[in-house]
Amino acid sequence: MEVLASPELWVAFFSLLLLEIVLGIDNVVFISILSGKLPAEQQKRARTIGLMLALITRILLLLSLSWLIRLTAPLFTVLGQSISGRDLILIIGGLFLLGKSTYEIHERLEGGDEESGGAGQASFAAVISQIVVLDVVFSLDSVITAVGMVDELLIMIAAVMIAIGIMLVSAGAISAFVNRHPTVKMLALAFLLLIGANLVAEGFDKGVPKGYVYGPIAFAILVEVLNLRYQTMTARRRRTAGSRPVGEPIHLRPTYVKGHEPRVERPAGPSD
Image (cartoon, rainbow, N blue to C red; front, side):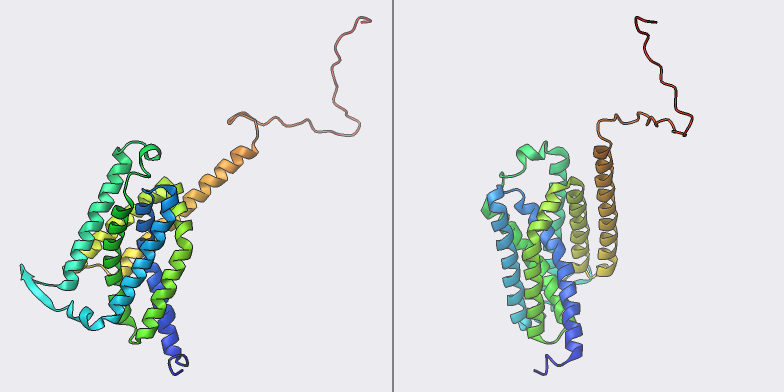
């Protein structure tokens, strides 16, 4: 009851919830891209399993805070740089994200027709295994951020569970939107390249603050939304124009003035 009556903890809860949602968007996008390689009837199942595994991973990490704290202890030194267990996970996960995003971009640019050879080529187990690796990386980053913001374990677990619930509800719409617009999918892969590079940099204690990463991402998304809106309005105007060819001038009717009716030429008849 003391926790529920504390305004500071409520502010921390909603701040953490918002942060978890923002950090989880890239997870949802990448899960959507990976599940898009499966047949249509398996995609929803893969997304649900992937997000449930993310929830389980984050709760287990939160429940093992003592082990999580030990991950920050230096294990060895490379060129004067101390490397901890957390750094290793971030570096390996960032390299995985860089490699996978680069492969996906290359496949879409050089791999031929996506419609004929994209979906259904990957096995369900292969997609789930890649999602598991991705969940561990993003969950570690998310949980360490949560521990730095809030001290109450129940609040951290509640924020994580609600954030994953929101992702489960919105995953289908996000996946459909990303797969329906090729430019959005390419933009999402470019974001994942940026996030992967930042994870590697964080592993070497050279990471860029998340605000500087997600700010440009949000701006690019806004520009893309405006671009899609413009394309939709342009297509609607063309449909409204009917059968009139594009570029043909519009012929105005003559102005009618009372007492000055326009002269109508009649065709010549036999009596003329």
